[in-house]
Length: 189
Image (cartoon, rainbow, N blue to C red; front, side):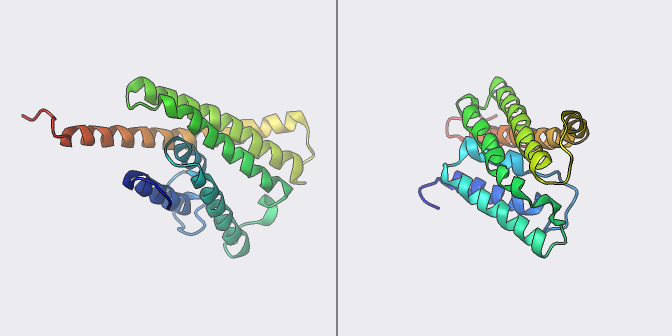
């Protein structure tokens, strides 16, 4: 890992492991946690160097290739639309980049981060679901049908993003409190 801090290295490894554990539960069989991939891209966009996007894309493709080949996942998800996951995930990455200046560790910064997460989720959902709907060959594409599918499936994407955004915000707040408490000039009682 070229030129990253110890904290960035820890975050890089943690996000990679989280993707392996939660991405469709292909490897872990662990279904209790919501899918984290979209928020992983957002967090990486906020806190990691730009090369981490390529790593995370490679990891996601590797996990999916395993799932399609050995994991018993239906090939209906793999179509020409699969390539649109790159711009979909990049939209989450960019939401993280846009949120970065506001990610200050205070309540307003956390609220803005959450807002960027939901905006990124909206764009990512439109790109990933829209492209699958239009180009997978599994549907007769009509606007009414697309809207009905979005109404059915988009809430899960938003709840997953909200879950991981809140988990990240809480984890960051706890880490910052810990860092402040161990600072040499911290007030002790």
